[in-house]
Length: 468
Image 1 (tube, helix red, strand yellow):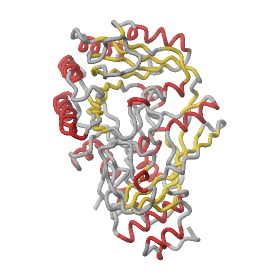
Image 2 (tube, one colour):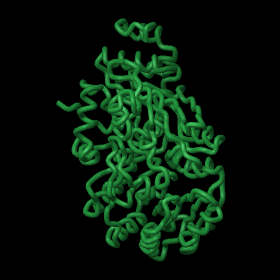
Image 3 (tube, rainbow, N blue to C red):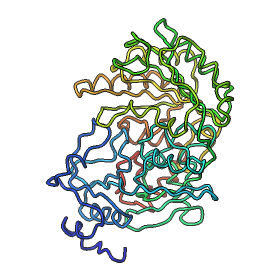
């Protein structure tokens, strides 16, 4: 930072002269493209977008926002459902150019730029026979997912993304570039493990990596639920999960077959389904044997199960979430996935406001259920229920949002009152939701926030106010 004059950022021209990347304003020919994020429901117009090329650029952007009193959004992959990666009349730090990935296969560690996606990480780590626990959508940004948790196909074996974070480079609210590790600013590292981006802009992550074979067994089968079998399928899934090995991470999801969906038997459109998806680490033949009961549950409407490269497993859902569609996702940690909760999920799955929507039921066990040495508050619930409203037309916003909220409200009596903050709608419940979800870690996180961001500059996130 010695070559940058933070005190001279009084104009956009001064900012433009100092950044290594690019400053995009509303009169720039790329502005309309640069301002877009994945979730089309967020149609915002920033005053300044900085395409950062380095941590120094991030420092300049933070200083510019602070100097001019502008709201600040940080965009990694840009795939956050809540839209925190953009802001009206403020500054957006776009980290997309900062996407390097390097592997230390001896130490089994991976260092990742703040703008990288999980697909980019998977491609590099698999060359060394390794993987970092990420998500289930390859174009998800590493930063957003990891900073607020990180559920994926490796969760039960190796834990959440945030639990595997071992070090980070961080730009603070005062524009300083600092390191966070077990030996340097350890409280800052603690806060980054699930704290939701409250304490700084992470420009580089270092994760623990784990051995993952290049080919694995992956289950992906949609069973016909048109005869009311949805609840029975979910009960069988619940019972199967009770004895599933930790090498297995499973998900069930309910919905109706969309018009024009590929890979389904003819005449399937509009039929209710319950699908089972899961991945088993280790010998693929053993994986197929372990998951056979879910595969053979009923009549398949679609079956894409089989042995496949891990990097392809990570892309299995990519086509279902195109850029620019409209998304509203919420979640509830369900401590009792009893018959009443299952009936509610099955009923909502038969009647979505959009046939592109699903209700996802994630099994949480093994390493994913262990406490994280960080701000992420692990729930005692064995299942995370995540209704995903996905639709195209803005005229359908209210109906889809209402469908999602209705199911979450119905499931509240079966929950511990917490949410997974990557799937928290637009976090419209505000501070009460955030406090409940951080649980007994809230006060400690607020104290770290007070140290590193006392003015709450980093507030476009699951926001924790600085402890007073």
